[in-house]
Length: 308
Image (cartoon, rainbow, N blue to C red; front, side):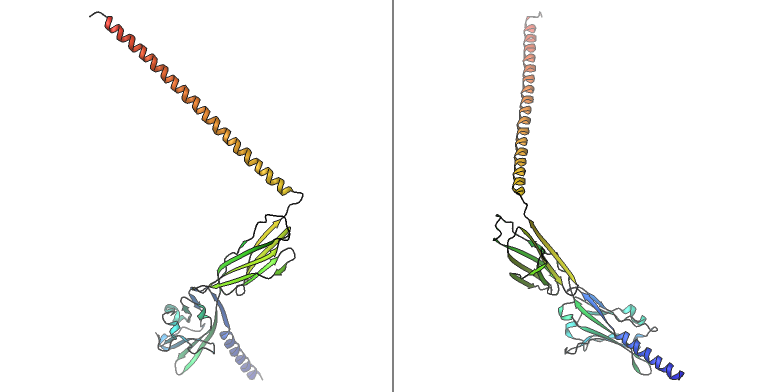
């Protein structure tokens, strides 16, 4: 019984190892970025001339599946899908150490696939020594939403007001929610426009029309399902009771007028002071000029009467 038990245990471990090797890793990338698809063999050091490495698309519906191929130490592009031409690279300094990861350049929406890495070694016969799968999905965080809300000009609670919310540079298409924060109820948007850009990202613009209330608390939320992100912006308009808002406005206006009057008075006083100083300087200069003229006249007279 013991030999059979040991054999069954070894078989179980072998199957478990194969399952672990095939376990898919999920990698999230942003459109336009470069991404590394991991495939690492933990065995002994290898020789490139005895290896064949295939990266392929594991999705059944794809007609062309060859992403990258390495045969006997050289890249083989004969069967590579045209979509991946000049966009894939292996790390040559890591291959003999068992790192067969693939660098995929400038990823786009069409690169969203399940990828499979298969490593074969040829000694006495060719056998598969390693397999791995990687799922590539694309996602990008949306910008912080900008929520714009109207300022009411009247106290009427029947006035219809419009809010707008915008965000961009995200992927995939977002979910947009308008929420009445007073009771956390969801409000249907009046308009929802999602734009798709050339770089693969999306932008969103939405509006909401509601009846004005004395206490409006509106939230716009942008959800990214893949990243599990919810970015929100809030608008709150609280009506102050007992006319305190009007009184505050009057006090503020009064303070502004007082400040303006004080500024004008200060300017007038400064101009008056400058005028006094200028007048004093002019008079002083004039008196000195007169004194100098008198002295010069006396000296001239004395010079004419003095003996030769």
